[in-house]
Image: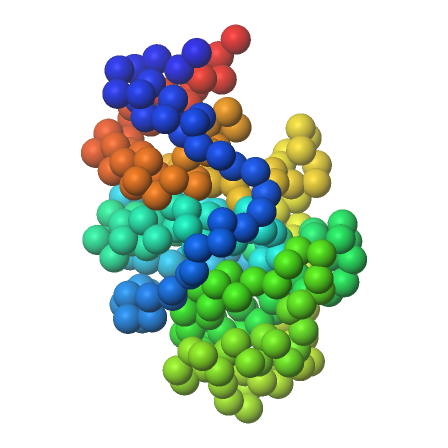
Length: 248
């Protein structure tokens, strides 16, 4: 059992949050003005997409698949808007690992096409904005809706993204090797216990994964914001808390 005063209360609150698959029905409104303020770049490993102040003391690594409806819940009505606020405050930097396993599981090529398009958007300095647009307009998981035409249509909603280079990258799957490498990085993250990958969305904060029993925190903005603030203020307590939760 997790110990540690306020951390017990915070994590217990997360358990009460529903975290099942499906949509909430709330309308998502991408905040382009805020998104434009966040720096973004490709990490030296060639697969991790870094967003936010590189000197931020708290680091959040997210594992997502663009077709995952629970990722959409996190990104639109869950903790992602609060994560963005923490990034704007330069308290947190985010590291994205983009998976595409749902194509094999559900059928189709939408995840791979979306990951390729996101990599192309990064090349244009528009990853954050396009990432928000994709999740705000995510097709149903069972529908292979991320076609070239739809991805280009959505790109038209991001000022300055459409152009010959981006359009060609989408239509030709220019970043196919990135898509493959990113999926493999996701699989490696699961280790021996989870050879297919840790599941999406999964959040690792300062090198410590949010314990499975408390993953509901991802879908409640206020609770996730409190968690990020507590970790920013006391990172060592976070590490101890996670270790204690994993103790027999």
